[in-house]
Length: 249
Image 1 (cartoon, rainbow, N blue to C red):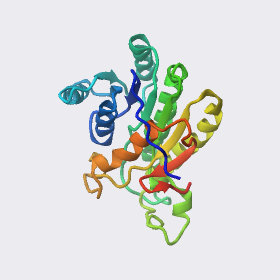
Image 2: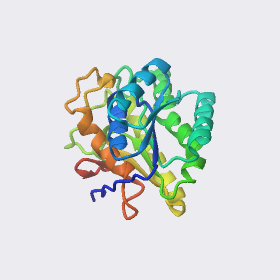
Image 3: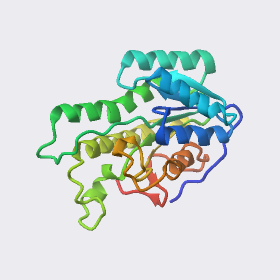
Image 4: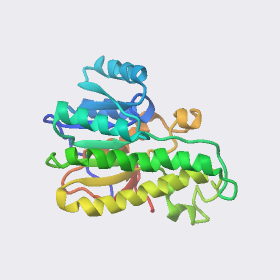
């Protein structure tokens, strides 16, 4: 099933973590084009300000939110600022993430794996929990967790799949598998509150994360994120999608 795109405007506010560059910046640009106020989540003030300036050059209503998703105090301060200035949040895109040295399961460095989980999984959980009261104030909030097909156990266990032999990226893949589990469980928890939660796979996009070796552009990668951030009331929740449709868990 392919999610339906709805243009949600009318003073909608969207926070995108890691939005000062790459897929996050492109997502912010696209949501601003749809009429949303975009909040650029960035841990570095200077880089965040440059991103906001770039968006405003395109007439976007963009604002910087200083946010380090691995720092609970930073997350709490950001949630307080958004509450004070905007009152609610309609869209949360958990985009910020990292990669590190590629290693197979038998050799994966535990310190590196802890770092991956602290950012790619626990960071997204912490941000979501902190901003959930603001999302609950919106009439139809949307949460998008930016995942990866590498986090799919279904694809990894299929010897014919394109990722079956990608064991060298175990730590990163496992952090995305955990993020997908969060998507499923949170979506179930929030069904009665009209908040939809989905995972998005942007594909192998050329970004800093992979040394710009990816085969897709940020414009292509951001498309499914924007789709899930703006799905209609009849759209799915608790799903995992890429451009082609549903991705196996």
